[in-house]
Structures are given as C-alpha cells and as structure tokens.
Length: 69
Image (tube, rainbow, N blue to C red):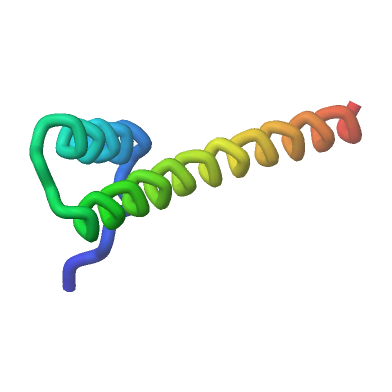
C-alpha cells in the first residue's frame, strides 16, 4: 500500500508560484479565478501553520533546556 507523503514547503511554494502565474498569464473565467485564489490561500495557510509549529517546538526545547540546567 502506498503511504501518502506530505509535500515539502518548497513544493508548496512552487505550486503557489505556478498558480499565481496562471492568474497573470492566462485568461480564465471568474469561477476558475476564484478557485485558484482560494487554493493559493489554502497552501499559504499550510506553510504558515508549519512555521508556527516549528516556532512552538523551538520554544519547548528552550524551556526543557532551561529546566535541565
């Protein structure tokens, strides 16, 4: 069975760039344009959430290190 792998931040940024260029270069109808904009927001939200989780993990490690000393 194939295990799903989460896309990396780099892959997400590449997809965001591709979708943004789609908006700029091609003439697309309004419903597709709205979908693309929503997809860009969703991907950016995933990246933001990951960054926040990394910051929380750093803070927890610092607190543990202070307690150990």
